[in-house]
Length: 364
Image (cartoon, rainbow, N blue to C red; front, side, top):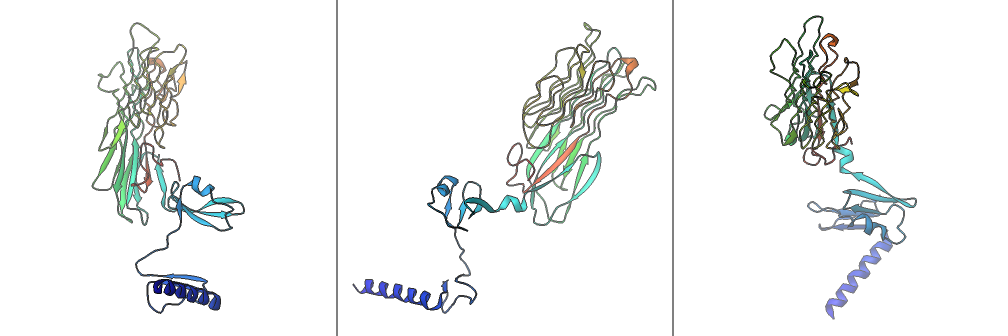
């Protein structure tokens, strides 16, 4: 009875203070009063204010929500507020710190880590190899794709990003040989991620040392570039198609020897067709925004990459962006336009929350 009476007196006292002063101070300290400008002030050195936590379905069950009502949404990890008949995301962590940067110009770049960023996830694509020429020509290999998540970085420090240049195609008039696609890479000075470039295609006057697809290293995942196709002696109209760029969880398709080409796997680009009937193509490229559909048609790009160029009259049979290998062409039509596609790198953060192959990999 005494306990109940004491509780009643406390409640009466609290209500009297609210009625008398129209202010409330809730504190774990003694003799703390609310700021004169506040109706309610919470005071503590080691505790926080906890909003009601619920999912979107439970939020929808609130009967006649008041204007400016707030909850923490456990599905979206956002603070929601009710305004003029609808719920809105008032604050979300991803909106404040999620960001990204993309490097697509061949060469060496220095990237300065932004303030507050302590981890990143990175994807790189190696450049495609240039296509060969002659009656025994082969297509260039596709570039590899490599990704690595949650790489530690220090705000204000510099990381080095290298974007590989696509291999050049063979040129008949100057006896110029095709070249390999260059590697693309990222390093924070301790950890290095590399996506190898595809090998150059074969020509009649060069030994067959190239046309293999690039290989990733230092990675959590990715895929090899597809090998370039080679001349098929049973089909005099067939010159090797370009290899497809590697994917997020599988290899690029092999370039065709005539009508036979390899499809992409795990979001990779398909190999290019090696025949002029109906069309000859470079290898399909691969995109930088996470794993998507693989290329399944001749020279089709994977995961948002562009298709390899197609032609029924030999020249301009370049690989698709990024990393597709250039197709081979007939000797007298080799004008250097059957180039491999350049590589690229993309960095997203925070690396502990945004991760390849498919967790919040789109732009934010």
